[in-house]
Image 1 (cartoon, rainbow, N blue to C red):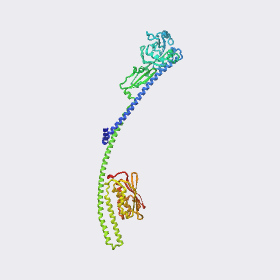
Image 2 (cartoon, rainbow, N blue to C red):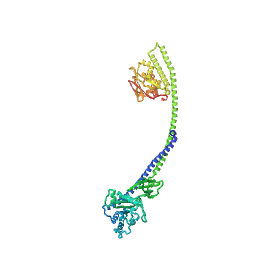
Image 3 (cartoon, helix red, strand yellow):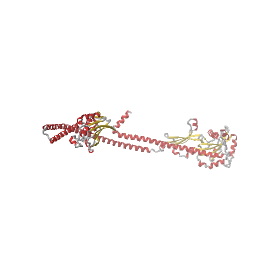
Image 4 (cartoon, rainbow, N blue to C red):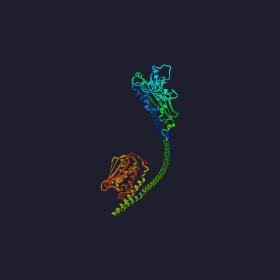
Length: 601
């Protein structure tokens, strides 16, 4: 099992093997389909063979029933107990056109029961019978003449057709054990009785066939065995030929046919009985079907066989070749297609690797550019501190020197200079914040947002007292992120609210939070002067302040840009959800269950 798993993993990791695997899999699938199709063909062949075998057995049984019908019709002459003469016997058989309607019949005969004590009188009466021929039958005698005593005889008396059948007249069935047993079975059962297969060879000709006997009771319908034996007067007998019986069937559809009588063996519980009819030559690898036909008291077994080539012709196997060819070329096409796919995959992987290298190079260049920009901003922000301090010092010296001569114009100019100095100071501070922000080096951890906004309020306490601002903080969640960065975000938002406060009302800032899907949405709402809708996107871009007061206040537009950078580093976002002259509401969406690290960028 482990070897199979390892082999599978090796194949999966080796795309070069995929075309071969597809080709072999196609061949295996083709083989599987061919096996299924071949099974269907074999079943169809066997079904056809069984159908033909069933049809043959049914036709044989029907032919035998037809012979029984002939005997039953002949017995109707004896129903009233009247004496049936030779002329009536032959007239009836001629009326049914025996030779054309019943070609399997070799001879029909009347076999009366003749007690031994009247045997000589019976022979004399037959010799003197001139109902058919004028001279009678002067040579009629019991055959064979036995020395042993028989209590009664069963003599073939009326034979039809008489042409070439006169040699049968006088034959005593009682002298043959098999024939006598069949006769007694018919007598005691009152029904048809069939003899074992036999060969009639009284003269120079030999006929292979069997006898069917039907008892006659002289117009009486006995119900018991004793009555049957009492009123029994003889039997009507038909001699039937096997070759004529089977000649009417299409036997060419079988390679070989054999028939045997299995009655005695079946009754004895053993497999016995020789084949009494055989046609064709059985092939050692032939397919064989066995059927059983019941003939009154006898049972025949019919064995039909087909040689391999004849059996194969029952159902063509051309579709197997079609399946094989289709499967082979389909497997070949699949392998070729897989080869193309593997080649395309390799090209895509190479292209992806090239893009990856290009991206890494671009990121390295971007990182380098960003580092240079931050270094430039850091240096610039420090360098700006010196002239800002010099300007503040100069303003202070001018105020002290001109303290006794200050006029309104001088005061206005000094205030303008102080504003420029403040704006330069804030610009340098923003540049310092921007240069200090490093999105690649976040310090992840659990951050209590309540503490974050509390620290921001502490940092801005002097400014908030100066403008009499009120900050209300509702219960905030704990998040995963960089505490210093999130505190910077909170400080910038609060500072933005203070700078753009309304001159006509006290500044009130509300901070709250709610869970939306898998994100915490922290809202910072103020009642300041608001931001026009056309500036909602611009306020998050550097140096894109929405108010004229930006110039005076010197914000430079960097605060909200840093807020956006910090939110995105935490896989969140910031936006303006509501703004009017009644105030502005910022919403920061941060993941509720995602941890962040340096890879957050």
